[in-house]
Length: 57
Image (tube, rainbow, N blue to C red; front, side, top):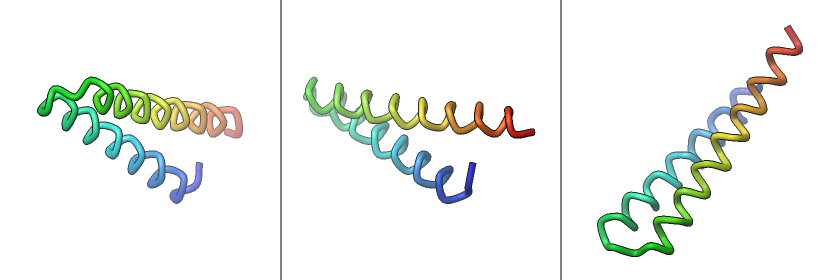
């Protein structure tokens, strides 16, 4: 996994986490769900990249 991909996935995960927390604080279930979805997608991308790296080694 390239460092750029790692940074991009981390930024997406952080963005999702922030949306989720904002949704919690404002009782906005849609924003909370959107943030949770973004965070999950970023985490899955990162896990996929780690699996690719493991097979390369």
